[in-house]
Length: 172
Image (cartoon, rainbow, N blue to C red; front, top):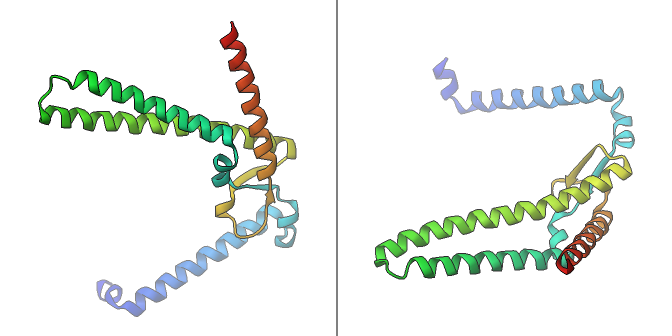
C-alpha cells in the first residue's frame, strides 16, 4: 500500500477521483435541494455587498475610526510616558511591548465596533429585500443582487441618527 502511495501517478489519479466525486456530490446535493439546477439561480435570494468601499465612501465612519484610533494612541502614549519615567531601558522596552499589545487590542475592538455598524446596515437592507444570504463582493464571481448602495444609505442614516443622539446627550 505504501509503495502505491509513493508513485506520483497513483497519487494524482486518486486525487482526481476524489475531486470528481466531491464535485458530483455537490451537484447532487444542489439538485436535491432545489429540485432542478436550472431553477436554482432565479429562486435564490443572495445579496452582494462591497465592504471594502464602505469605510472609504463613508467619511463619517472613516472619521470616527481615525478619531478613536488617535484617542487610543494618545491615551496609551500618555500612560506610557507617565509609567516609564523612572524605568530602565530594558523595563521601558518590555512595557512598550505591553503597550503595543494593548494598542492592538484597542484597534481590534474599534474595528469590531465599526464592522458591527456595517453588519447592522447589511442586515437591515437584507431583511427589507428578503435576502437569505449576503456575501462580500470579493467572494463572488457572478450573480447575486448588489445591495452596496442601499447598505451605504442605511449606514449613513444610522450614523446620522447616532450623531444626533450624541449631540442631544452632550447638551444635557
